Amino acid sequence: MADEIRALSAQLAQDPQSLVFLRLGEALRRKGQLDSASRVAMNGLERHPHLADAHDLYARILTDKHDYSRAFDEWDMAVRIAPNHTGALKGLAFLYFKVGDIAQAEAHLEQARKVEPDDPTIDQAFEMIRGGARAAPSAAPSPPPAAPAAPAGGLDEARVFAGLEGSNEGLLLIDGAGRVLGGSLRDGSGADVTDSVAAYLAGVSQEAARTAKLLGLGAWNGLSAEGQHGNVHLAHPTPEALLLVVRERGTPLGRLAILAQRATAMARRWLEQQ
Amino acid sequence: MTKGGPLDLITRVRGVRGAMLVSAEDGLIVAEQLMEGIKGGAVAALAASLAGRLRRAMEAAGTGTSVFWHLQAEQGALLVVPGGNNAGGILVVAVAEPDVNIGLVRLELLRAAETML
Image (cartoon, rainbow over all chains, first blue to last red; front, side, top):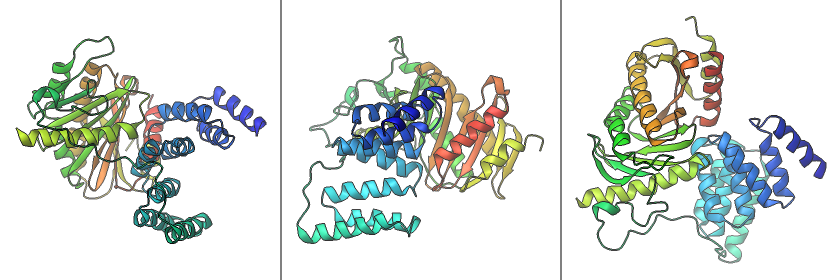
């Protein structure tokens, strides 16, 4: 095992863009070197943010660290990227089982079985779940992430995103004409770039809607972009409004999408109150 | 279609309904491999316009220019790799079904963009 890790590390050092980080991260995880495994997975995710296997690897490491909430986010992202990713489906089933949601656990396993009907581990998981469900209600070491509770009291204009993780940075809500409704943005040097970014984004929501319609894709749900130094996610809380979330490049796109989802729900509530 | 080569690898991915090379400057199609019924010209123009706005907004926000973006919709996705000036300002665009492996399409789009350097 140590030789394998050494060889894989050397391979990765030689070609940092290669997918060998998946094998190295898994080898470290199996050896119980979770912090090292975590670093390898994070570096890999930074280079390959849309690789479902990378999110799956990171989720397994987080599960070993008993960080079930973030593991849920990562497996959820893996399934968004590759809906038939059986590793992620099994992982989500495991986490649902952990919190006692047997129906969801079975539904995810069922989906995995449709993709890989001959995978014996799926049958074993089914047996475990059904046995576990009969034996006793499962303990719930950590619940999967839930939607954030609505802030008490009304939201004021300056605090559209009050209570949200990272609400004081990288969140911007604008209307169809590019007017700022809430949030603010600063660039790497700390300069306020809120108004210029908002102006460039004016009309993006309508253009995205037209593009999706022309392609026969139905309504658009979001737009994710990887930049050289950061990642962004755009969502539309209402047909005209646009929400922008900006995070540094190291932030996994899964976390970014989930943060955007929560910010969108808050912005929608705030806009309804106006 | 003189630049059909790079598109072959993209359209070979399961769930991809078509791919195009689009001029980022004027939104015109340079090459295309699209399934019937997709209005390539209009989509190319809108994709170029979206790419331009996104590029300017991201540069202003300090994230640098975009290396990949994708528009997610109820019944599919539009995935774009801006080829950059070295690739003649060409956008590599794919239209995909909702259950496509985005990671795989992204890789093929990046490879296609590299072949144009």
